[in-house]
Amino acid sequence: MIANLDGLNKAFESKIRLGIMSVLMANESVDFTTLKSLLELTDGNLASHARSLEDLGYIRCEKRFIGRKPNTSYSITDLGRAAFSAHIQALASFINTQQ
Amino acid sequence: MENKEVLNTLNDIKEMMERSSKFKAISGLSIVIVGILASLVSAYIYFCMGDYHINTPAKWHTTVIIAIVLLVVAFATVFVMSYLKARHLKLRFTFDTTMRRLLLNFFIPMAAGGLLCMALLSQQHYGLVSSITLIFYGLALINSSHFSYSELRYLGYAELALGLIDCFLVDYAVLTWFLGFGVFHIVFGVIFMLKYGRRK
Figure (cartoon, chains in turn green, red):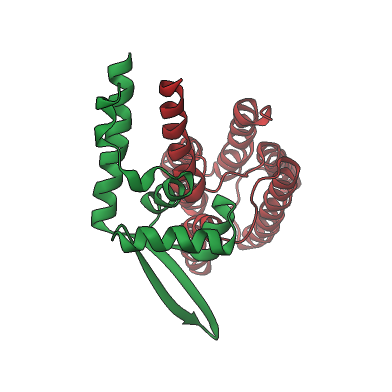
């Protein structure tokens, strides 16, 4: 049973990081506040998890100003897309071997 | 146990992808109400004008004004009732990306169709106006179904088909409006409520 879980990505073990990746898979780009309210997180919580995904190269962070307000938006990278797909594939095949 | 956990995770992923990309707080009852309003208004135009041949500029003038008022009232109804539904079910109802995308994708075809109708009316080409309203409304629904309930596209297909049939008919404007904006909305709204209304 444990052998089947080989394909799982450690980076997506946390529910929050899994949520961030799910949202970014489905959307071209999502800004910080939208992501925060979707996942019901605090500023710091989202920032730190997003940072760790950014460091892995799975997501891209873009900071700019709209008028005078700073605006941060996130989007998924090709690497992130591939890694997340592989993770889902591993989860799905785990279920298939169980049945 | 392990198996269940994995299934839950996959479900969470799917739900989060859906929730973040689609606007899912449209009131089914408001669709039915819009249908009833449109039926009443078509009946009013039919009886008020003596017959259903809208073939003089004066009749068109009245009809266009009524149609614009109806459009505004209908949209306001859907908006307000969806807001109430969202508040009741504690769904998200903010002017965020999903709502913006839905509105944009709905109103671009609507605006294009509206302008086209205005141009045709101003040049006294009355014949195709009723079908164009239905065709563009259908396209707007099909377009917005990608950003909301995907079932909206079926209503869109129906409006589109009716509009295309209407192209080949002369003088049935009020009847097709009654069907397209009245009956279709009521039927779709009821099915919609049966599917989504009872949850939670």
